[in-house]
Length: 126
Image (cartoon, rainbow, N blue to C red):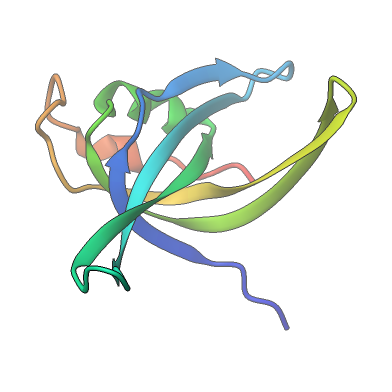
């Protein structure tokens, strides 16, 4: 048996990008910074080390949610990991990203308007 579940919270590292696939499905891409604290072996002080997580959300919910997200907003997400690989300029590239199934807004400092409850009523098309 395999389990593919991820839950993280952090701040958006950039404004989200909304685009559509050739089939018309909306795709929302954004990044989240998640800090890890560890003790510096030389100074003995605790320090934050950022981890940057690429995220993608699909469908009608992605289209509705994108206007409420902006760089710096704090969110909690839950979803699953997806590995992608491709070739560009003769070099093999890959990435691991979170396919977001649930999102919770933890700060509203930059939202232009309150997030309506019906934004979360749509099913995620997987």
